[in-house]
Amino acid sequence: MNIKDHWNEIRQLFKKALKTNKYYSFASVDKEGNPHITPIGSLILRDDCTGYFSEKFPEKSRQNYKTNDRVAVMAINSGFFFWFKSIRKGVFKSLPGVRIYGRVGKRRKATEKERAKWLNIVKIAKGTKGYNLLWKDMAHVRDIHFDDARPVKAGVMTQDCMFQNMKK
Image (cartoon, rainbow, N blue to C red):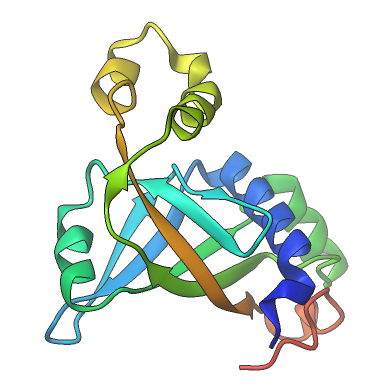
């Protein structure tokens, strides 16, 4: 599947998912092959099948990236009305989620533009204790180059959704 053909739709689904979940599920693998999943809300997708995320808390993931730079990121639209309407009608009008796969780059200092973009996203919490503890000093990021995408399907309820030609 050519991820570039669906990148704009993938980004839209990621935006919807972040509104309903406040995070994405990041999966990495350790050197013994054991999976590790962590919630990360700071992923910013660019328009060229790449993105970056702040790496302040996920210690286990950071260790895993030293031996395996592959990552899977899953976004699910968990909106109540989206699911209620879909279940009531027995069909999803759009996919409930998508998984994207890629390679994580080295940890690096965030640019001022990247930092400002993140702080703008969480500005609603500015002035709170949580904002200061969690986000105020997020200074490092990792780039991700995505190379594959796979839809999250729900049997016959998603058979006519966008990305239907995505195999795997």
